[in-house]
Length: 447
Ligand code: NDP
Ligand code: 2IT
Image 1 (tube, rainbow, N blue to C red):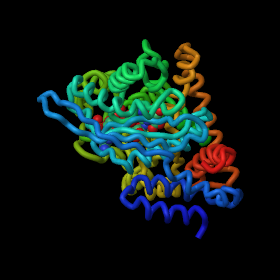
Image 2 (tube, rainbow, N blue to C red):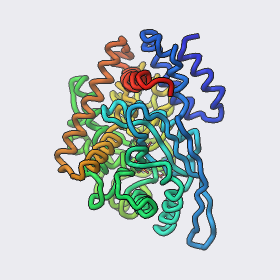
Image 3 (tube, helix red, strand yellow):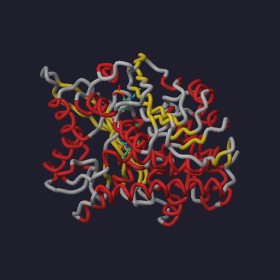
Image 4 (cartoon, rainbow, N blue to C red):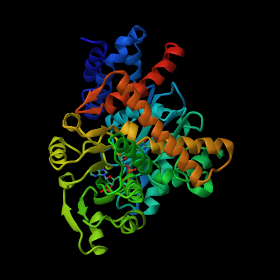
């Protein structure tokens, strides 16, 4: 058994109730064996065993009072995974599906993603099984204040810097920041995704979606083409999906479908993004309401968005939303590029099928890194006590995404990783992200 297989076996035994974590670790560890063969010193230092074990895992009670005066209790999490190359950095997910295994998979992915950005940020993730959907602003504030009343003691601008993720947007970050400042009496860049008048960075709202499309554009360039005239399907209709759609349209492509957890819309003429922003960002409504804006659009309840014919597919909702049968439909319909905006939206077998059938595939840890990269730019601006212009931040984001593409594709080339006539960017991203962290861990001794 190879070193990576041994570590994976142990990991499966120790974490048998965490399927998403096992899935994320399997994908990474299976990619790394060629690097481990080249660097026997890693096994001698039990580097992988240390890498897969979070430095610290925090779980806590979050009590709050709802609008009926009833006390509610949620579970809070922060997994501080790896600080070899910088303070822990990663989002906070608020969704009823959140549990320790989900936060561990996200935190593990974040280590490699953050490394790929080239910026000094370690990996972490947190959140709660609290569901902001259908709650009043006061209830959301009560939850966020209670959550931060415990979390504050574990974080700090040079220790751990949380941010948004599913269910955590500008409103939630505001309530959490207010409570942190109140308890600590300290105005520091402890969270990213802040409002523009109180330490936030321009482009952070747009960054994950824009960055995803900058990355996908590099993939199209490799294939001798670009977004002009391309038909694109984007799943989800939250932060990442909305700004991915905006950038596709700016580059001359046409997004024809979007979704939420209830169903999906199809608009042959191209999605009217102003309508989607009003439904989702202002009214916090359901994607079905799009029919009130565009009479010719179609709504389908439930799953099925990947049955829509497209050139490029951008899954931007959640983990394991693109399954093997979806992959088969995409291939049969002639889709040529899949780039993940969400974290691990494609199952392992669907990824393999896409790759082996000639689809150029980008893993989220490379293609969705624009959000956290711009968070790191927010941290830099906070340290300098300066704000950069939209153009400056957007240009840096663009350069970072091009560089991530170059690092992942160079690593794929170095290890001869080709699949279905394309570079294997899954292997390339894992290897390139891993090497920087591994080097720092080796230099820092047994910690
Ligand atoms: P939002 O909360 O803004 O939007 C999430 C979208 O995905 C919504 O349309 C939501 O629908 C849908 N969705 C969520 N959970 C499910 C589910 N279980 N089944 C079906 N649909 C679901 O989150 P973001 O846009 O910020 O995040 C989307 C993805 O991108 C996540 O995987 C996140 O980890 C990842 N990501 C986010 C970054 C960021 O900067 N925000 C950075 C990098 C990655 P509904 O409203 O019905 O729940
Ligand atoms: O998954 C992710 O990279 C994020 N949710 C963004 C994290 C961040 O710190 O900006």
